[in-house]
Length: 502
View 1 (tube, helix red, strand yellow):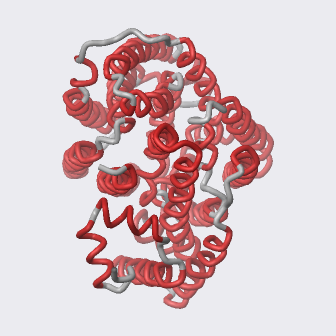
View 2 (view 1 turned 30 degrees about the vertical axis):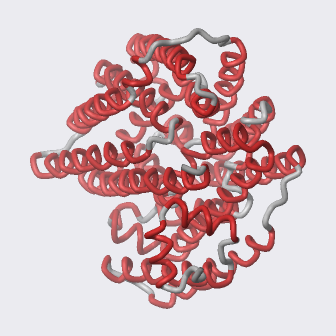
C-alpha cells in the first residue's frame, strides 16, 4: 500500500474508533453529571483527574518513543529491535505504576486534607488498582497506535464503548454513586486491557534483537519532561487547583463540563489525527525525507483546521443551548466558560492546533519541544496561581485558553523557522468566513430543543463541507491519496459533486 493511502486509511479507521469513544465519553458525562449533581460530579472529576496526572507521570515519554521509533523500525524491517524496545519500555512502565500507586496509598491522608477531598482517602485502595489497569491498557494502546493498526483499534473501541454505556445506563437505573462508577471504570479498562494485550502479542512475543537504547532513553527523558510540564496546560491540574483555592466541588463540576465539551467535543473529529500525527510524520520522514515530511505536515494541518474549527464556532454561538439541553440548568454556570474555551481553541485551530511542533520530533529536535511545551505549561500554571484566587473559576479558563493560544502561535513560528515549511495562508483565510458566517446565523433560531439542535448542527456541517470543497478544493496529490486509499468514498464524493470527476 502506498504511504499516502496508509495515512488516509489509518486516519479513517482511527477516527471511527475515536469518534465513537468521544461520543460515549460525552454521553457518559451527561448521565453521570445529571445523576450525581454538580457537587458530587465535581468530586468524581477530581478523582479522575488524580488518576490522569499519575498516568502522565508514569508515561516517561514512552508514547512518543513508540510513535517515533516503532514506525522507523518497521519501515527498516527491524522487528527484533521493535520487540526489544517494547518489552523494556513495558517493564519500566509497570514498575513506575506500582511505585506511584504505592505512593498514592501511602500519602492518601495528607493529600485528601491538602485538597479538601475526603473521597481521595476513602477510595485510595481501589484507585491504585484503577491506575494500574488503566496504565497497562495505555501501554498496549501505544503499540497499536504507533503501528497504525486502526481497524483493530476501531473494533476494540466500539466494543468497549458499548460495554461502558450499558454499564452507566444500568447504574442510572439501579443507583449511581462514586464507588459504583469507579468499579465500572475498573471493569471497562480491564476488558480493554485484555483486548489490546491480544492485539499486541505478536510484537511482544516475537524474538527480540538487542539494540542501543541510549539515544532512545535520552529522547524519552527529554520528551517525558516536556510532556510533564506541558501537562500544566491540561484540565486535571486546573481542577485540583480550583479545588485547593476555591474549596467548592460544584465549581470543579462546572469547569470540567466546559473543558470536556470544548476538548473531547471540540476535538472529537480530530481525535485520530492528534494520535497518529507523530507516527505518520515519522514514517513520512523515514521514507521520503524533508519533502515527504512537509507534505504530511501540510495535509495534517488542513485536516486539523477543517475538522476542529467548525465545531468550536458552533459551540461559541450555541453554548447556552448545548449546556441546557444536555446537562440541565443546574450547570448553566458552565455556559460562559464553554464560550471562552471555544473562542481560544477556534483561534488556535488556524495556527496548527498546538500539534505543529510534532514535526520537530522526527528531525531529532526534541529539546525544542521541551522548551516550547514546558514554557506553555509553566505559563498556564503561573497564570492559574495568580488568577484563580483573584477572579475565581473564570481565571482558570482565561489562564488555560490564553496560555494555549500563545503556545500555539510560538510553536508554529519556531516550526516554520526551523523547517522552512510554508503555511497555507490562502487556505486558512478562505476557511475563516466559510466556518464563521454559517455558525453566526444559527443564533437567529434562538432557544432550541434537542431535535432542533441536532438538525441545526447537521445543516451547519453540510454547508461547511460544501463550501470547503467548492472554495478550497483538494489539490492533485491529496485527491490521489484519497482515491488510492478509499476509492468508494472518493466515488461517492464525486457523485455528490464535492470532488471533481476524473
